[in-house]
Image (cartoon, rainbow, N blue to C red; front, side):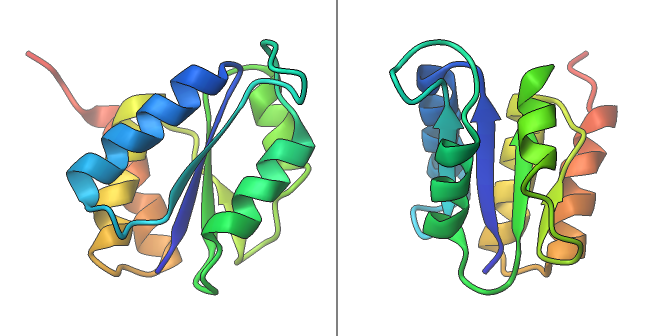
Length: 124
């Protein structure tokens, strides 16, 4: 199963969005939050992202979903073509779309495509 790592400047935002995604996609879906800094502050940490990647990696690839700014830069340091990819998507909507696709057992390219479809979601 494809794993997901939600990279945010806030540990709380990352953890709660991961919980929401697992709640919708199923508890078996490998989703982890990697938010904040090592000391609990706002920011991003490549070490925390790397730990989260290891935690969700089941051998089918990992999608990183960053929130904004430096989280994108931090996530880029861990990209590995065909194994660890970044989705340029809205944070919450992309996370849920990707989690549903991953939970359904879709391959990495399809999970990434599902996340990217979230860019076009309309609320009204």
